[in-house]
Length: 125
Image (tube, rainbow, N blue to C red; front, side):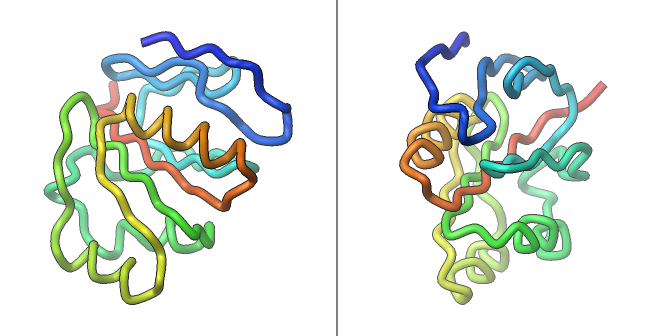
């Protein structure tokens, strides 16, 4: 899926999402990552949302999001109830969706100046 739009240049943006691939600005990523408007955290260890743990989410929490978008790959999947509860107890919104939907939603929220963090789960190579 090719995404193109005008952007203000004040945040990192997703250019393209595909099977096993996310392009941030002009760089391709082939392993899971976290994206905030001001930084990319490469090699996030989650490759299967259903196997993710609360410990895996500490890197997300360190980015201090107000909203967390969990891109789960090509198909939507949901994390454990314990992960969902962790975010909700901290007052952080969490949504699980496909990587393509997470990219679109991230772009919208980052463009509004929101403190959004998106995770893109990729199987890696």
